[in-house]
Length: 454
Ligand code: JFZ
Image 1 (cartoon, helix red, strand yellow):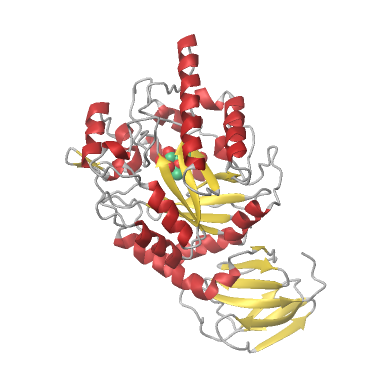
Image 2: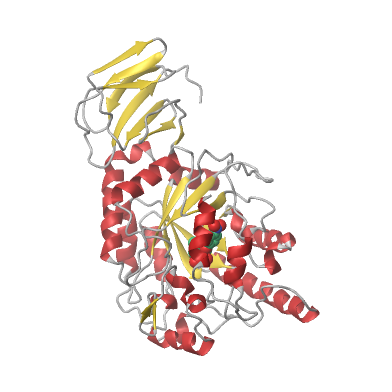
């Protein structure tokens, strides 16, 4: 149902008709396959260290940055609602007009070390940055195109210092890479002629060459986040995605790959279909939700927020709900064209980080801990024989009943002692202080009986 809302929101802005090269917008509305909690589609649960690390991370940051950040959602004096990174399509900007934006992309305030410190302060364990979005512009010095940062006044690779700085903070580096490319003349949305087929084959080689650069020249890349698989040229030929995936894995054996590298026929290492939403129930596979802080703009938009900015508390709750369903949460930022992270985003990242600093034990390295009939606003996670109740709404009674759960002890994470812990008819009853100890969400830790099986 949420997908319907996303599509309805997109539909408002769909330009039509569009040229053959960039007809991705209407196709997006018509044919976006979505994955559901029940989808397992050939998924095999990986238990190698790289996958276990990704699984334990639980919280990451996504960065959408490119020449679309220059107009920032405004074109010819008019605000263009919706995802700012789509402005070329939404405002029907001609290729020459769009290319002129490259001459204005000069992020002189770009400070990757400060960015990395900001990610650290947010408590992120991995970061995924757009190396190339649908517009085809590349943030690095690619040998295979001039449509990159070297053709801007900045003239320096943006990814190398990014990867180095992020890694220096102990944070994993991941790369977003768009399969759709509005600029490359060989890209085809559909294959109708032999010529299209040959062009797309060249495009595939182009993608591989770029992915080789990204996977071999920027230090260890832990995850590749593909996007834009919905055009018929890709989604009707699953062998292409399989081939691309095999190629990436051959270059980087531990690579963690979301399902968007594939056509809709199967899930790779995790389900990345939870876009600006969380699953209703816990998926059977590994999964990740990616989330905007405003409504549906990933790239920097100067003014449009849709339903406004999500509060830090709400973002913490979405992160917690994800962990309580054994999933990861990737929150997005869209830096300004000058390289600054906007204050609305830094303040939210800092608030999330401050909460995680105290309560992160209940999130990192945890998985779902199902408790029946937990009151709304309360979530449960588990790590070994410790479980955590994370309360975004402090119960208005002084007793919290945990149905069917038998524990040895309970404590507040941030202060000593609970009023009481008792057992009544197989349920654990925890006596609570009348005030929530934490303004965002308080954590009650439970010491499980050793017999409670994992
Ligand atoms: C894609 C991009 O088009 C968008 O610009 C942004 O980068 C986002 C992270 O990914 O948009 C999508 C992709 C998939 C769905 C919705 C929007 N989906 O599966 O519902």
